[in-house]
Every structure is written in C-alpha cells, then in structure tokens.
Image (cartoon, rainbow, N blue to C red; front, side):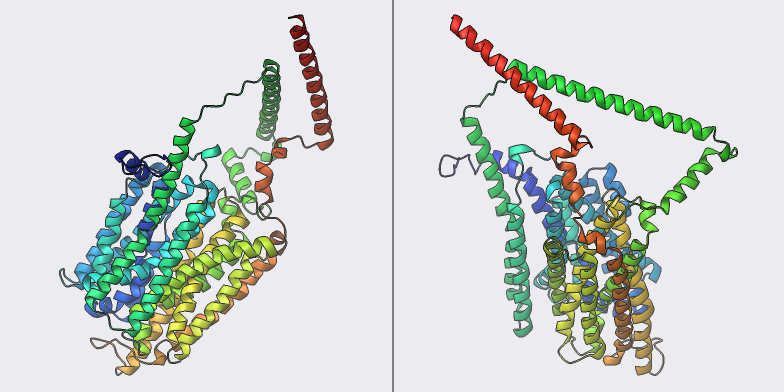
Length: 634
C-alpha cells in the first residue's frame, strides 16, 4: 500500500482505482476519447477518390453520397428520443453497432469483397454509419452536461473541440497502422470508433450533482483545454514536418504513439482530481465534527414562519385553481362558441398562440420558434454559410487533384480538422467575452464569419498557386466557428425550455445547404467540365477533371450565396439589436437571487421585515433577562 506524502489517502490500491473509474471526472475523460474518434464524417475527402474509382461513380453521384453522409450526421432526433428513456450505455452501444455495420459494408464494397451495391444502398450504408456520430454525441455530450450543469458552456466547447480534432487524429493513426491506403482508412473508421465506445460504454453514466462544499470547480476543465491546445499544436507541427520530410512507416508509428500519449494525458488530471477529493474526505474524517445547537425559541420561530408561508402558498394556489375552473365554465357556456367542439377551440387557440410569440429571450414554444422570422433568417443564413464550407470540405480531395495537389490531400484534411477545432473554441470563448464586455451581438459575429469564409471560397475559385493551404485553414476555421454561434443564438433568442428540439432543427440546415450547393451546383458543374475534357461524354470513361475551371464557377456561386447569407443575417442583427444591448442573462440571476422570492410590493415587504426584526430583538432580550435571572438565583 502506497501513501502520498503528508499522510494522505492511499493511491496504489484497488479501492482508489475503483473510485477513479467510477468517478465523475472519468466520465469526462471517457467522453473525450469517444468524441475524438467520432469525426469520421470530416475525412470523407480522403477516401472519396477511391470510392469514386472503385465503384465507377461520377462527381454528382459521389456528392449524393456526401449529402446522405451529412444527413445522417446532422439528424439526431432519434438518438435524442432514445436517450430520454434509456441510460447512456444503450445509446452508445447502438451507435457503435451502426458505425461498424455502415462503414464495414462500405469497405467490403470498395475492396471488391461483395458485388457492387446500387447507389441507393450505398446511400443507406453511409447514412447509417454517419448517423452513429449523432448517437455518440448524444450519449457523451448530454451525459456530461447533466453531470456538470453549472459548467455546461465549458463542457460543450471542450467536447465539441475534440470532435473537430478527430479528423486530424484519424489521418495520423491510419497512416501509422495501414500505410497510405485509403481503403484501409474506411476499415479503420468502421472498427475504431465502435471499439472506443464499447470500451468505455459502462463508465459513461449520469451521476447526482454534489452541492455545497463538495461541488466541483472548473480547474480540471481548463487543464483539459490546455491539453487539447497541446494536441492541436502537435498535430499542426506534424502536418508541416510530414509535408516537408518523407516519413518512414516506423516514423509514422512513433508519431502516432506520441499522439496517443497526449490523448491519454487527461487521465492524469482525473487521477489528481479524484485524489484531491479523497484527501478532503480523509481529512474531514480525522477532524472532530462541529455541532451547532440552536435555541428552542429560534427553531419555533422558524417553524412558525415556514408554516405561514406554506399556508399563504396553499391559499394562493387554491384561488388560482378556482379562478381557472370559473373561466373554464364560462368558456363552456359561452354563446360565442356556437356549439363548436372543444377540440376546434383548442386548435384555434393553438394557431393564434403560435403567431403571437413572447419577447426575445423568453421561452418560445416549438411552433412559435419554427414560424418566427428570427428562426427563418437564421436558418437561411446557416444554409448558405455551413452549406458552402461543407461543400469545400467534402470536395477537398477532388479540389486538390484538379489544382495539382495529389499528394497533399491528407494535409488539407488535417488542416481543416485542426482549424475546425480552433474555430469552435475561438467563437465560443470570444463571442462570450465580447458580449459581456462590449455588448457585441452574436448575430453580427456570425455575419463576420460568413464574410471571412468568402475569402477561402475565392481562393479555390481562382486557383492561385500554393493558396489551397490557406483556403483550407480559412474554411476549416469558419466551418467550426459557425456552430457554437448558431447554437448560442438559438438558446438566447428562443429560450432554453425546448432547446434540445430547436438545437436539432438548427442542425438540419447543414444537409439542406450541402445538397443544394454540393450536389446540385458543385457536382453538376464538375461533371460538365469533366465531360468537356473527355470528348463530351463520361460514359464508361475517365471521370476526372483537371484544371482551375473544374470548380471555378461552382465556388463563385457559393461565394455569392455566402454573401447573400451574410446580408440575410444582418436582418437578425437589426431585429435583435435592442435585445443584445440589454442584460440577456438578468433573468437567470434574478431567479437565483434571494430577493426573487419576495413580494412584488417592496415597501410592504420591507416594513414587514423590519417589524419581524424588531419582534425578534425583543424576544432575544426577554430570553437573555430570564437566563440571567435564573443564574443569579443559583
């Protein structure tokens, strides 16, 4: 048995190991690893070329598969409903099974181990495999948010950041394990996320939140953040070095080993935090307990005041019920109803209520939010913004090939992944700081991000030599930055009561934008240009397009659509200008302040409090006189 210095609790024991594995912070560590392996949708461009050549697809068919990938990754309603009625391990297990089944069938198809499946079946395979990402996100994210309700913003930003880094993690691991083989990458995508989820499936669970002195601080979360920054920096350095130096397979293996070491560094933070908790408990057991005994008169006074408050609350509730019953009776006998059924009256009231939303920042109903002008504007801006950047990410393999970067596709994907992480973290923290200090509205920051993404689109459109690296950085950053801004705006403008449903509705804009801009625009125009280069037809021949013209017109259209989305977002900036100039979190502080439970009449409540205080002083004085008199008689 090994003890820490200073007489602390034992460390190298089975009991302490069990405490670490069953602790709250190990849940965070497990979720970090699960989400760092759940970003397979971001590396589609690496294996899209082998998918296209092995199955003989044209670019439009390939982009159709990409659309179903995005559709599966962003439609998480089913996983959310399942998570409402089952523990997290059920959702994670289902996600692991879907991931293994979907991507394994894709691997067998492109490796020629099965007959060539029809396009609709391949769309189902990739949609099922990509939908496993929503199961992993729901099982991990929702569990951590519920375990740390007072740190939900930090939890979401941290976990989403690891999702953004997952693409770069995959590119490093698959080269170290299989070499530069895109078919084997699909096999890695099939088994690795499923294995990680199954490994930690029984450690991810909901836990009661401690209150009082045992409440956890945010210190470990900042340690996790610093480790994630170190991980992103290491990945960026390795991308630059591997692009300049030819690595052997052994060198790639060493690089992957260092990567895994950094990924497991949060475990040290977990052990340290659990030791601190155990040490505080150990010291509290050694110290004698402090017992405070109140005088009987004070206890009786508190009980009397509590009884009076309960009686007043019960009386008010009974009066409210009586008033509601009277209004219901009047409605039933109201001649204006003309004998219409109550269901019709309810439907009419619902429709009328749907188009009469509350003030911005209050809790909207689902229908009120979906038909509101603010949600429509935000939805259109997201279709243009996320749809454009997602089109660039999914086509990065063909873009690099057409512009003469055939050996740098992995580099572009890794850069996009790292700057996707940077965009999520920067947008989340920066928008919060600017909002708190300068009242800078989040919708305006979303507008600036959309305009910045146009720079990356134009670099691709004009094909300036050696600028695709910069374009991948800009597009990755802007793609990541749009998501926390979108979800934060939804929570602030429409309230938190139905946030889970509205959150998923905001995600639906991504596949819609990808379908319009990726399939209908980029895929179609690419095939048209490829047909020109191959004699006017792609039937049974080479479907590859080479040159700047392959994506020039597509990304000029995407740039115009993104600018239109930025202009549309200015409507939301104008409509929410007064809301963001005020204190948008004031109602949460008012609900938690002691004065929130007082009477609306400040003068009457203050006078009542003063009277009670005088009466209390009088009772204490009489009690003190009586005690002194008894002492004197003794």
